[in-house]
Image (cartoon, rainbow, N blue to C red; front, side):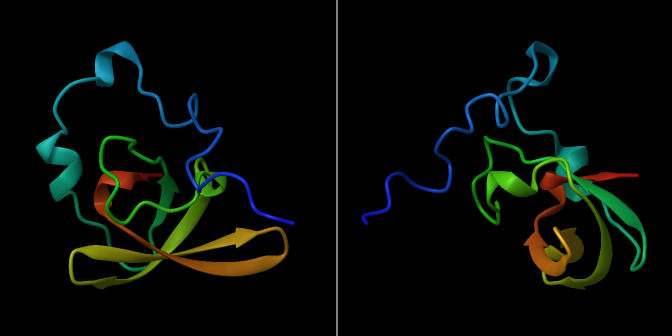
Amino acid sequence: MKRIGRTRRKSRHKLSKSVRERGKISVNRMMQSFEAGSKVRVKLNGSYQKTSVHARFHGKIGIVKAKKGKVYEVSIKDGGKEKTLLLHPIHLIKG
């Protein structure tokens, strides 16, 4: 059976921003840094599509493993399986 839609399908409310977050991308969020082993929350920024992952990972909590260039390698649990995501710091929040 043919697959319908792309990875951003049905993600209108997940990727939308609140009124106060709209506008230009924050430089502070873009330049933030994380230590290896620190906990982060995945909060996808819809206005920055580079290094964005599937919307199913939005809201998940993971652990930073390492930094690779400009992105961070984040390990999360999806079901019972551990997965590794490469995310730009604009998609991550401390905690």
